[in-house]
Amino acid sequence: MTVHSLPEGLRIPTFADVRTAQSRIAGQAHRTPALTSRTADQRTGASLFFKAENLQRGGAFKFRGAYNAIAALDGDARSRGVLAFSSGNHAQAVAYAARLLGVASTIVMPTDAPAVKVAGTRGYGAKIVFYDRYEEDRLEVTRRVAAETGATIVPPFDHPDVIAGQGTAVLELIEEVGDLDIVLTPLGGGGLLAGSALAAKGLSPACRVIGVEPEAGNDGQQSMARGEIVTIPVPRSIADGALTTALGLHTFPIMREKVEAVVTVPDDDLIATVRFFAERMKIVVEPTGCLAASAVMSGHVECRGKRVGIVLSGGNVDLAALGTHLATT
Image (cartoon, rainbow, N blue to C red):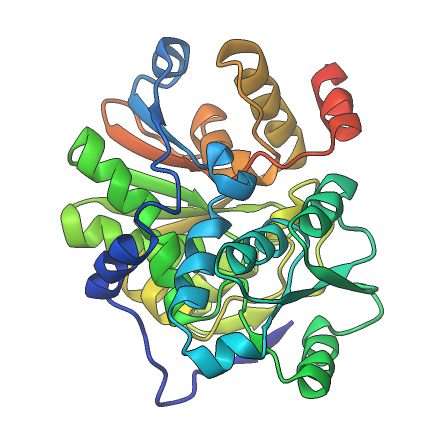
């Protein structure tokens, strides 16, 4: 375990940046629906509102931040192309957003990234550079490619414009359903959680904001407890979109100020939640996208009597893996 202090001079986004992002992505990102389920409400004793980012362009919330960040680049930066590192959802988001904006893209992806996400990224026109996540440092690989190409790196979470773009999902949710008592989002590097916290506190100041990690990778939980960024070894979990080793330098200060807690859920609970959405709500949500919902549905967060917003962060799951999850008893 490694602990990192925060450098000075970071540009930390604000609620105003989330509003700006909302205007910038208007007409490009889908305004995804807020879904409800009487069965889920009965199980939890709460009023749950699921923000269905599994129905977002590219299949995940990541499109919001990627489009916002690339659209904010000047002409020179766009002409040199963009570069990203991702296990899948950010990869597809950057590739898709870049194509829409007429910008070339290169994505650094782990060799064990889900096949459906690799195919989706290629389908959006990106060049892919593979690396071994257990033997190579993805940042070193990405910086090497950036030095060779001159492309601008669009990080998956640790960037002000990416954070602000991700926050638009909860901004839309609260605008649609009204004030919420609690907002929960999945947590990997913290882009979605930090942006959601900015939006939630900006619109509904009394709202409690909670992040949810896979049990095997609780660097966020440890960081919040210590008040410093903690780095852990690469975790192993079916929540492949949340297998980060540390929070971002831009995301952690927001979390420390605006997020009440970080909780974890085991893979077995994620599988049960994947099945619930498929069987009862007839939607496909990937395991990472189920993190926040699983925390509520499995009782890791008590929500009885509350109005609760839950971000379903993505739906890009390999069909073979989905079949395995659904067959699990």
